[in-house]
Image 1 (tube, rainbow, N blue to C red):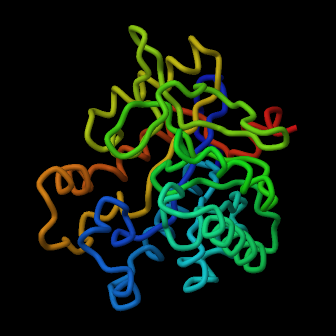
Image 2: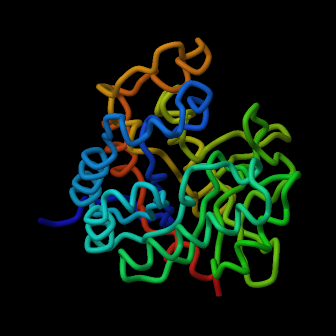
Length: 285
């Protein structure tokens, strides 16, 4: 079958944060980490659906994968690699970098990298901090990533948000340390302010046309590739509901789950998508 025809445009980077619904940072106060192994895991079936979706649209992606998930579903790691996608690290246990000491963070990122490389048979070059938790309070995290052997990070979101964000950070790839490149999640600049354009909850909650407009604007006005992210649980409207979830968190987490997969399919039709290590190859040299 021939690849779908799209207008000539920049190749953008498609990324997936491979974690399950019960590992989301916003739900952490309601879910004890010791209960993770007793909960219904849905990440395996959701990632398989994504792999099928990407194959249908001839898209490749970078999968920032939790070591906890990889350890329990090693065949899933092998499937990701066999399908031509990039395997990258999301840490081991989905602990925010900002909530760990330097030594704890080093142990977490080392453990995840080694596990993923053993299972995938490929060098792991990229890392994304859970909840974009590298910021003003912990710049030492970049030193740790460099020491651990990572070549790039995608852990900064240059927006104002109540849970994360470095609104004054560069919008495009830069080197926080020589030898380490930070590739921030995409924003578009409007009236002197960075607006989110890189997926996540904004992609689910706002009309699809807004995301399409923002990515096109970055491609055509900034002449830069975008980097977009989402989670496997975002295509899973049947996931178990967590009792006691506050209204704000419930809105952010559950609204439009039934629409995300069709929106992703449209996104894959509207733009060209590739792996982070390929789309940003020049920035990584």
